[in-house]
Length: 113
Image (cartoon, rainbow, N blue to C red; front, side, top):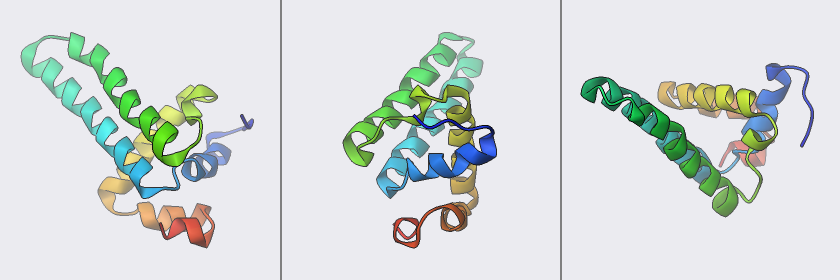
């Protein structure tokens, strides 16, 4: 796994590891479940749902890497930066700005997909 000195250096690598739209889509679903689990935990006062959140989220993410993207999840080498990047990508997707961000960091042929 590559070494990085900052999150700013890591971010383009993270986007390259998520070049396929289906991979990003499954990450979006998994990250959405994090929020669903948190809301459910608060609503039911059953905080085991919070423990379930990463299990669900990483299941979607890792399966997409192994079967769609065909690479190793960035979480394995840089867990905290990957977590931050996942929420950042989620935010860009929600705001409709991910395409522009991909265009800044990926080659043209990958940014269009």
